[in-house]
Image 1 (cartoon, one colour):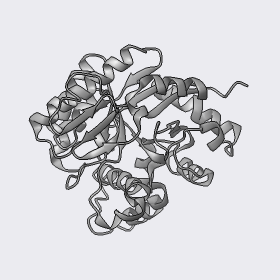
Image 2 (cartoon, helix red, strand yellow):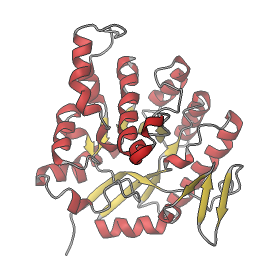
Image 3 (tube, one colour):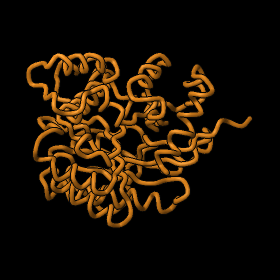
Image 4 (cartoon, helix red, strand yellow):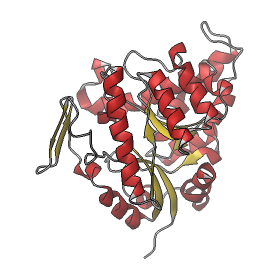
Length: 319
């Protein structure tokens, strides 16, 4: 039986372990026989991340025509200095290029941006955009860093000039209260996304750089639940809120988000906050917290909503 077509997956992960400079990097241990990768002491347990052919097989099974691939959080490595980050990021991005080049009709890279080094990230944007590629992925903000900080101005300027697509994915958390119960993922990740978006909104960054398309992971995380509160704080001029920038209710319409909400009601809320035309398909392949069986997991949505998420919205996004 045929499955409904999915035009694009904006949220699929791979690690280009076979590319030069990845397995050999300091702080990285790779056992090819056991397919065991350890990065800065963090063991990567999902072996499918090393196998592009596994992603393609899943795409064929689920009717996914194309995927934009990005590296997952264990590869973000916020502790690297600028020189180390440059070498590591180049290896990752060149590896993603090689993977996509072998399957150009199915895969396209989202180039990793080391947000802890905004000048380096801006240079990567300029170089990749000059080569005709202006789609990127970056962490929401490493521990101790804020996306509204003035040091990130060159990055936003470069992204705006390139009319770039930026997939914003939660990175490493720093709250010890989330250590038990898998809460760094279950609660920390969605909250990190909302924090990052809050800095972009209340600093007026997307208003000043309107050619950037920022896509938030996991349906915007906890952001849809607090959108009304943000608007109320703006409307009542709470301390520290700059009311000269665009109001949150309007600024939120500049984002797009993937559909990984795990609840039809929450997707309805995301549509009301961001706009029905701003929800696109993302799977988070191959992680179990994603949509590994999207046609089953999203079956409760209306046919119209699934068609918008699977086809209409991503096709508009990708041109």
